[in-house]
Length: 120
Image 1: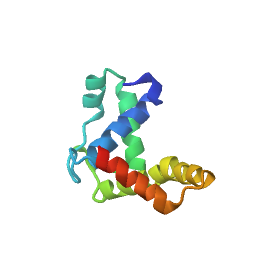
Image 2 (image 1 turned 90 degrees about the horizontal axis):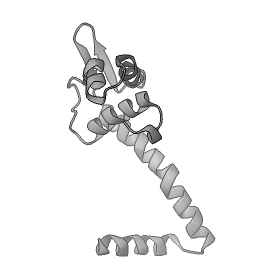
Image 3 (image 1 turned 90 degrees about the vertical axis):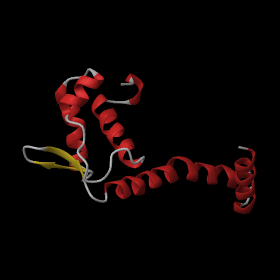
């Protein structure tokens, strides 16, 4: 885990979210257990459980008593929707604000983005 990336339980939750978003952890599939996560990351099982429980509270995972935790139906779309909104807040709004300050129109900005994409 990365000490600079916030609390460890949030890093655990983010790791599971990333797996759901990229498709490596499918909806209705079983999520790693707190014991598996704690052994893999060499962290306290209670810390791993706190990350998993946060995802349960968010509706991303659900518990099957005596079996484990599973990815909820619709979890990927829920995460994509939230991340797109966060992306807009973190990147698009500041980009548009700065473009406006510089007198760059939306059309000019789109052209810049298209050129950048072509150069990749």
